[in-house]
Length: 330
Image (cartoon, rainbow, N blue to C red; front, side, top):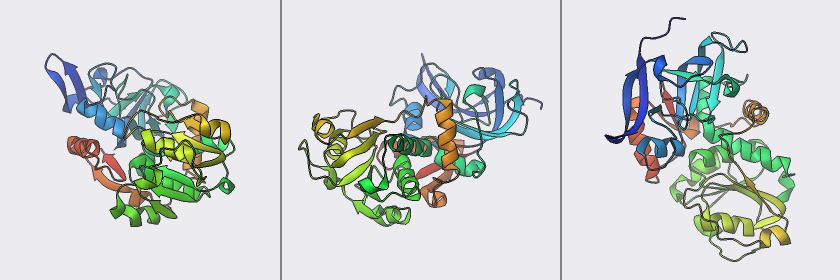
C-alpha cells in the first residue's frame, strides 16, 4: 500500500494559542507510533470524546492528538505478522485520544497489542454503534455474571438509560435474558426504551431515596450517573446482587453507607473499559457479536455524522441532550 501524503483528521491542540480542535490535513508521520495502520471506516462519539474535544474535561495527556476513542477499519499496513493488509479490525479505548492519536482521522496508526479482529457477526457500522459505549455495557454484564448475577435475583436497573451506554445496556441485558428496568428523566423517550428491551420505565424519583437501606426492588443494575442515584440503587438491591458503576453524568460523589454491603452482601463493581485486559476484551467482543448482540442497533443509532459535525454533537452531549448513539462515518 502506498501511504497517503496527507489526510483529514479532527485534531486537538492546547498551547500558547489556547485549547482548540478542528479538522486538519496531516500525514502518517504526525501520528503516534504503532505497528498497524488502518483506513478508517467508522468511529463514534462518546461522552469522553465530547470532554476531550472541548477541553471541558482533562482527558488528553499530551498534545496535539487526533480525537476519537473508537475506530474500526481495514488494515493497510502492518509490521506485526498477526495482521495483514485487508484485515477488518477495531480498537476501543486503550489510550486513544488520551496518550495517542485516535479514530477521528481517515487513517489511524495503532499498537497491535490493542487491535481486535472484527468478530464474525459484526460489520464495521455495527461495531462502532457499539464502540466504547456497547463494550462498557457488556463489560458490566460480564463482571456481574462473573460475580454470580443471574436473572432469578430480579430485574436489572439501568440509569441514564437514554444515553449511549444506557441504551445499549438495556438492549444487551434484555438479550442476555434479564428483565430490565430503565431509569430516565426523559419521560418522552419511554416508548423508545420499551422498544429496545425495557419491561419497565421509571422516572428518576424511583432512585431518590436517601435511606441506607430500602425494600429490595432490583437484582442489581448499571449506573451511569453517580451520586444519590447510585446510592439509592445500592439501597434497593437484593441480597448478593451486583451494581456496576460506569459513569458520573451527575457527580463523582457517592453518599452511601456500608449497610447494603454488610447487611445484604451487595457488591459494587467497577467498570473501567479503557484498560481492560486483552483476554477479557476479546471475550466481551465475542459476546457482543453473538449471544449478547443488541437487537436494535439501528434504532439506538440516532445520528450519523461527518468529522465536520463533531463540535455540534459535542455541545449537545455536554448540555444533557445525549440520546442514543452517534456514528461517525469517514
